[in-house]
Length: 311
Image (cartoon, rainbow, N blue to C red):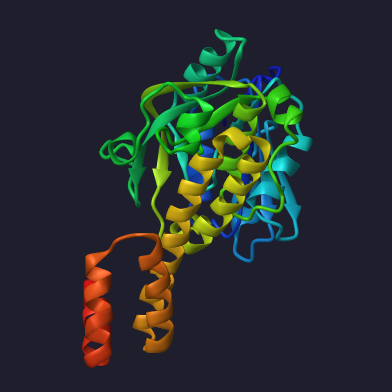
């Protein structure tokens, strides 16, 4: 039987959970395996309808707390976890992801060594089912420092959810925006950086990022729509970044139009396909989409077949 020594908590781990009964045990085990034990794990069940709560409560450890709320989104769940805890630092861990055993040791160490730093991010391995070293997030997206407002806003540096931050900065900017059902983490980093907070990056992969077809982050259209809201907020707060924000918004609206065009074609809605495709082409060049539009005018079923076959 494991016996845990009661120690003051340096960091509170915010874990939103929604219908992740198949995954949350792996996430919790990765917390229990940390080389630093001065943590509190606050799991906020966001109205799950599966066995998420039962799995979470099966772990008997005084450092783990399970809270339930009606479905309100990850932002509200993380804010609830923060309110339910008291610690100098806050760490983010999604219930379908996991940490390397030395994640907290190195992330907290980086913050403790740099009092001016508001948050620290790290690299991560991506995985589907089995956690094995392989692809790193930094191989697919830009993650080279420095971590500055302009670089984060322009996507020259992308922050994943493997982040640990100072609570005072989290409180200073008001935590997560409950109105954002997606991109709420991106919004938080932007607001901290706008407020003058500094950030650091550890290139070492200290986390595991699970790739799921049914995850919220897999919905490009939804993510793009909420990310536009983040850029609209940034544009209002920092008029000097208006051009940058407008460029990013244009790209996101192109993505939305393109995704809508593909969905309409798959469903055989050819009128809607042409409408969305024309909108996409006003925002970005896409020879393949242009060719598909021409084919859809003379042979709609063939265009639909080719689109379905490609995807």
